[in-house]
Amino acid sequence: MKQATTENGKDTNGASKETLNNLKKIAAKNGTPVFVIDHEKIRRNYREFEEALPRVQVYFAVKSNSDPEIVRTLYKEGASFDVASMPEFMIVHENIKNLPAKERQDFIWDKIIYANTIKRIETLKELDRYKPLVTYDNIEELKKIKKYAPHAGLVLRIRVPNTGSMVELSSKFGADAGEAVDLILEAFKRGLVVEGISFHVGSQCNNFENYMQALQLSANIMKEAESRGHKINIIDIGGGFPVKYNNKVKSFKTLAHKLNTEFDRLFPKDIEILAEPGRFMVANAATLVAKIIGKAVRDDKTCYYLDDGVYHTFSGIVFDHCVYPLKAFKPGPLKVSAVFGPTCDAFDTISVAEELPELEIGDLVYAENIGAYSIASSTYFNGFPPAKVVHINK
Ligand SMILES: *Cc1c(COP(=O)(O)O)cnc(C)c1O
Image (cartoon, rainbow, N blue to C red; front, side, top):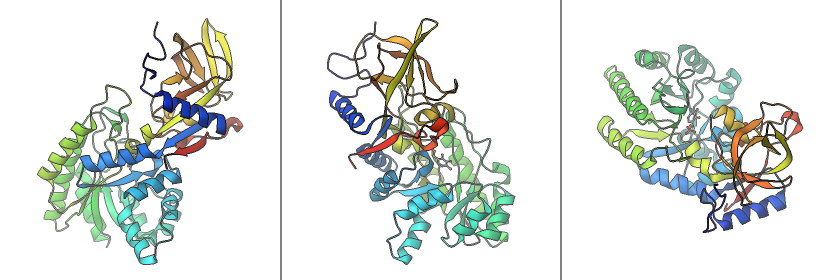
């Protein structure tokens, strides 16, 4: 039978004894569920991305984890930001409100992209005075932008293959390649300025062909637009950069190498290249510690009830199609168990087949690599609040 810990004191996933002791201490001090964000890991992810893709400016996708402390850490590293709502815009703006007005405006122009192709009219009205970059992918949105945010710079989002990505986005967003040039011309005709082209290959993209095809499509559209008299200055390659949740995930270095080769082959030297990584920056930077609050045996299977579930930090199981293997702090022979969240809904099921040692009420478990699309979509369902957030290595 498999053991939860190995002889060298590391658990099966490689978390060191020191890390585990630290998590236990944090849980003892703060209670559970507790969501522990390691800022050193965020900085490492940012630097790894920058080193691998030197021509690319990072616009961190705030939706993946909108904790203001994360925004602050990435801001200090030199990141720009991708926001998708007025509140997300303000989270970033909070960090820069002490800058003089002129610098603040430059910051907004250079460092924020409002990358939601669908914007409320009220939001456009509010955004206009900040003159931000905004994306669009259809004529109705173009009319709205012209009317309510004429000072915005535009980025056309195109639809690209999302095959083999964990989260598909192409059914909801992106102009077809065939209509792209018309949408660019239409914007200029209305007195707006199209600065760039963007795409998203789907989140947790493990099929690098998606990026290659998207870059080729973008280059074709750019050439065509230029031949019609409009030079495009920005290419925004979106998010999708895969996180090593398991060994089936292909290497980011391989992807970066392919991207760099294509940048040089397809685009002029002076083009600005943006990326909007979300998951890549935060997924491995957070660990959740939860407590067993109930235990039962059903159909000969041990069932554990945690103080956190799919309406809360484990929301990524539903919305992100992600799995978060649960680990116990206790060693012991593993057996297949079911794990549920605390709410009164049977949908609140974390796993029907989790390998755990025999645990008791009051014991702690943890889930690693749970930093992206987790607490960001946590609710207050059934009166249970989101997990407490604790920052380490800030
Ligand atoms: C969600 C999203 C991202 C981030 O995607 P990841 O796969 O987490 O890197 C980037 N850009 C846009 C427009 C998004 O909607």
